[in-house]
Structure formats: C-alpha cells, structure tokens
Image (cartoon, rainbow, N blue to C red; front, side, top):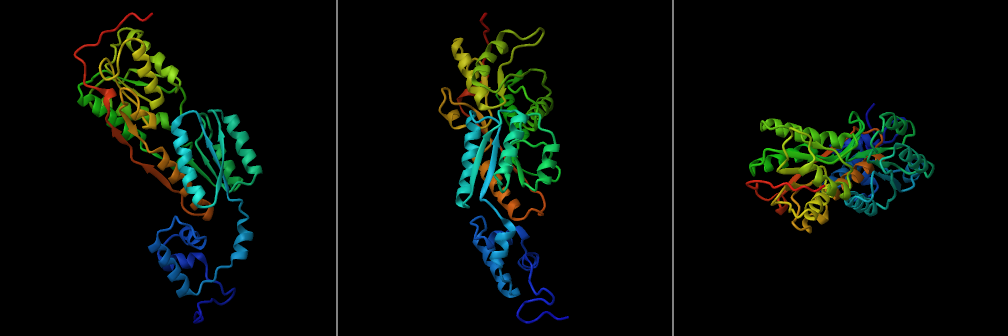
Length: 358
C-alpha cells in the first residue's frame, strides 16, 4: 500500500523516531535530544533532523512522551573519595552539563565501601533518579550492574569499570599516560624507577600498573620496585623513607618515582623536603591527574593530565543520551592523557645520597 501524501502511515498512521533517524542519517537518541531541545546537538545536525521530520510529516506527541518518560530531572553521582581534588573536578564537569540540561545531581561519597555504595544506590532508586554516574568502589561485583539493569536504572561507569562488555563508560587512557611518563624518565637517564601508591585493586590501578610494567620491560629495565600505599598525602610523605632507606636487599634505591596520583606525589615531595631533600634534585617525582595544585607546588609537579572535568562532562552527556534512548548501543569514551613536564622530575643526579632517617 502506498504511503499517503501527508506523511502519515496506514494502520496507526504514525511516523516513528526510528524512521526519522534513518531519514536524517543519525541515531534514534539524537532525534530524541532534538525533540527535547537539547544543546548537546550541533546546529547542523538539528537542522537535518528537523528537515527529516518535516519531510516525513512527523508530529511529536508531547503529552504521551511526558507520560512515558515520567522523569524527575535528577541523577545520582557516586564517587569514591570526595576529599581527592580530582573528584571535585570530575563533579564540576558533571554539573556543567547537567545544569545546562535542567538536571541536578545527588552526590554521594562511597569511601571505597561497596556496602555504602549499595545503600546510596537503593536510596537514589527510592528517589526515582533518572540514571546514575558510578565510579565503582573497589570490590564492586559485576552483579551490581545486572541489578541496575533489572531496576531499569541507566548507569554510566566513570574513571573505573567493573565490566566493559556492553556497558557505558567514560574515562582516560591511564595505561598510555603511565607509559609516556616512564619514557620521559628513561629519556632523562633514569633506569631505577619506582611505582608508588595504591592499595586497592580496580581497573584504574590495573591499567596504571600495566602501563608501568609494559614501559619498563620495553626499555629492558626491572619493574620490581612497586610500593603500595594509601592514596593520601601522609602516605606519600612516609613513602620517602621507604624508598630511600628501607628497601629490602638486594633492591637498589630508585632515582625516580612515578606516583599513582598527584596526591601521593605531593605528599612524597613534602616527605623529601622534611628530610632535607628536594624533588627534581635528589629524586625525580612525577604524579598523575594534573590537579590544580600540581602547577602551584614548589617545585611544580610533573604529571600526566587526565582531564577530570572533561571526563565528568562526557560521562554526563553519555548518561543523558542513555536516558533518552535506553536501548541504544553502549558507548565507551576514552580521553587521551597528556604528559605535563614541570620541575619535579628534574635532571638525573650523578649520585644520590641516602641518609639515616630512623
């Protein structure tokens, strides 16, 4: 049967979003965003979608859409440790996007406790949030994501992932970032490099450690100097003593330290200073994340920028797309990392003098 000239269809007579998407050459979720007037859609794409609607005679039933959506314009944001300035930057990025879209976030600090994370998720479900951005606490099991599916609660994993199969995720290329940092230290002449920080096992630690191991082996260097410690400034400061004086024989002391994040690196620099030593002169120090304080420390911290704010923005945009189109294909957004060379890595010293700090 031929389609009527007004663009309606026989039977129920309605043009679907899928047909509009196919005519415009975009995804169904993009058409949905255009209908909601979202600023996430580029002007050229918006015009193409609107042209397809006009050509097909599509009529938006806003009342039915509202009943179908029953949305609260709220989302949950669960992070692992709010005291870390990296998570503050991530949160700011999420808020940038949500505020522009008329959404607000309920923020929860899981403190790396899966049980606490579970309570917050249940509470957010009770408040009927439209979706969640989850930085999984260490020890989170994949069953949690399956349960969110059963709850029909859209979820975007950020920074870490429990499962990357068929799941939305936004993060940075941790492995490449660490490899770049190792390459830089080796180019400066260092052959004994320590990897410092992290006591919990999760995807972000695994990627960083894998990058360290791969780069050291690529250069034919030993990768055995790994010092695990809590991700706090105090632990970083205490690591100075362990690195320089308390390594078990026959391990040689390092001339450079690549820290899991900037918080540990800044602490390590304080620990060196307390012992009359200086980062970049007595021990090359690099961090990871490029938090705002990194550029202001003395010496300024060499680090790997992972664009926390942008990751937050991408995670929020991805969640909004998932809310608009629950059945769309999963997306995985990996932002590139970038080495920022400052003073703390210094030049390789001709020798390093270790003091009795006991």
